[in-house]
Structures are given as structure tokens and as C-alpha cells.
Image (cartoon, rainbow, N blue to C red; front, top):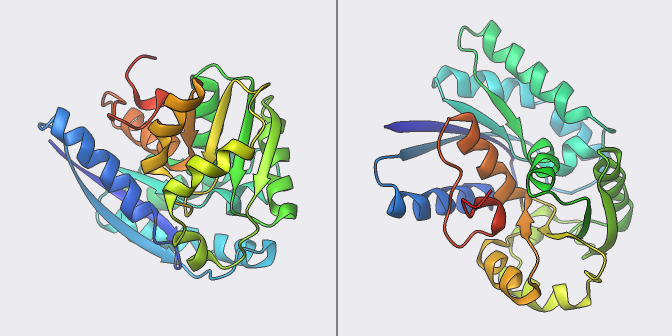
Length: 249
């Protein structure tokens, strides 16, 4: 049965409409009876600064209404830092507000956010401590760490790549993360967040790094797919996408 997936994305995001369909295409090879189509609405944002992110977030209500016109089965707010820079727990407020917007439009639609999905995904794999990699400038990485830690998850180490241009973030080679992660102290971590950003590509590196370090590895995009499948009452399984989507949980 076909499911319509709506994506609310920053205007400069080039990764979520690549990695989410790719994961679900991998899944369709294993479970061909479940098919998906993808539908996007965009919020203006070019530079990853707190000011631009807050301004962008205001547009998410419009995006939710537009996508509900298409009667999507689930909507995913695909910008982690736009949520996390607004303070602990904001993903719950955002998800409720966007749901209300779809309801007022006559098409109540389940809402997930990559921010909430990452926190939930870490908890789902049973991790209490994580080490993370972000593309952000260090002050924004600090806000992401504070947000994660407000959810009773300790961040033991982090690497900030300090890329402010969102288009440049999307141009990063995901396989570089196989080398970058070697500089991340994972000794105290239960799991690794290889990309705490839905714009920084990481999918091709997830399973490689997990196999190399022997600990669960996930990303904001992987966690978002888990929540999408869960919200659709479908088995949250994608091959070669790390422990969270392995079907072993």
C-alpha cells in the first residue's frame, strides 16, 4: 500500500530528499508491498545561524498546511537545529502546533520532527551516553548538546565541523565521516550520532562506522525514518542503515 510522506525542509536542504527516499527504497527491495511517495514544502534558510533558524521556523506552519492539502500520511519537520536552538522540549511544542495547523485545514496529520526523532532514537537503542558529530559552528553544537542532555542523555564528546553555509554542509562527502569519527572519543559512549544534522550526508557511512567501532551508530536522518515507519504502523527496518533500523530492537 502506498504511503505519502511529507517533508518540511529548509530551502537550502539537499539531503533529506535524498537520504530518506534512499533508505525507503532500500526497504522496498526487502518489503516490496510497502511503497512510498515523497512531497516537500520549503522554508527559506541559507546560513545556519540562530537568527535565520528562528525566522525560518515561523514558516513551518505554512508548510504543514500546504502538505496537508496533499493528504500526506505523515509529515516530518526535517531540520534538527531549528528546533533544538529554541530550547529544551521545543520539538513537542512544534509538533503539536503543526498538527493543529493540519487539523484546522481539515486534514489532521501525524507530525514528527528530526529533533524529537533523534532523542527518541537514542533512547530506543538504550543509549544513555552518546558522542556526536555536527557540521555546525561550536555555539550551535553546544545548544544541540544542551538539548540532548536535557532529555537525560549525556554527550561524552563532540566534533563540530564549523560549516555555516548550509549548501556547503550538503556537499560533504559522507564517507569522510569514516575518517572524522576516528578523532571522536567514543570510549565512554554507548552509541555514536554520526550526523546530528539532517543536511550533512552520512547514510553511506553509518553501517561502515558501526561495524568498525562495534557500537550502535545512527544519524538524525536514520532516526527520522524510524519514526516515519513507526507512525505508519510499518516495521521499522532498513538494511545497512545501522542498529536502530536493523529490526533487532
